[in-house]
Length: 158
Length: 174
Image 1 (cartoon, rainbow over the protein chains, first blue to last red):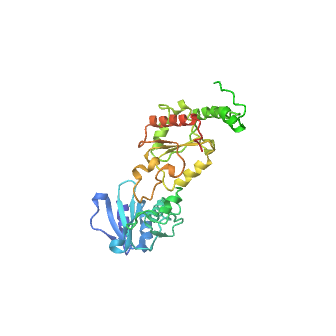
Image 2 (image 1 turned 120 degrees about the horizontal axis):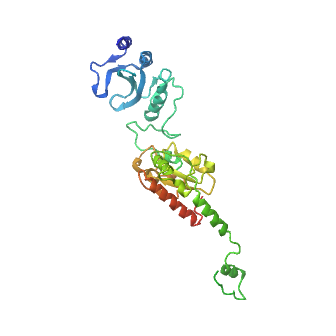
Image 3 (image 1 turned 180 degrees about the horizontal axis):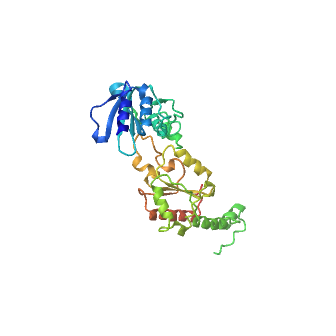
């Protein structure tokens, strides 16, 4: 219990972090937070020091509504479940600080978010595509992604 | 051996050769080799997706592909005769599969196992970005086995069809 309250105190110390009133029971999240992108490394360090793991990292294409991408981090721990979701709003085309130094799992998650949605992560040791073919020049999960270029099929050996 | 009438005295050399057939029969050796090739198909050890599970089942004791000489999965492309494409070929994997195929020595054959390797199967839609729509876009395929995934019996049937194709002796192989 003291661990959890320590976490809450540490999170309260981060100026740009806003926490939602009610937990999201549907997704099992005990805490829903929004934070400025300059503070995400600090948030990651707080969770890391409290013994949490980075459970999930993805991005959302919200450019149509608010000209921004949302990067979503989900932290959880072994033992008593305590899931926290942290959302960072990034203006379209701008980069987010990388968590790869804090969490090993962030390395591939960030590469995936970059590959699928084109979000760049500052300070990532090896930010190259992870799932799509070599030489691809598209980000397939963007809302305005239409048809894969025909050239891509040829590159696959067709 | 059937009797052939003697050629007319004024026949040209070309007519003589046409009537008598080839003077040297390399076919005999080739047919013998094809019999051997058909009965000891060594597949390359690799699987791409869920079809590979059925392929492993076909190789294991219950279905036992070894009964047909096809159970000797080779871990090196240099020793393999047949490539069993078992599963979805993603675009990222496409060039790798092509490289493996190029590393296999001739004569070599390919079996497309399952819907994904036939034409992309359930992952095919206009504008998809993830998969190669059919193994024959990358390498020449000899036998197509439909199914999702095909049962081990179907794979064995495919291997037997490939054996027939090899024993037929035509220059099918690459």
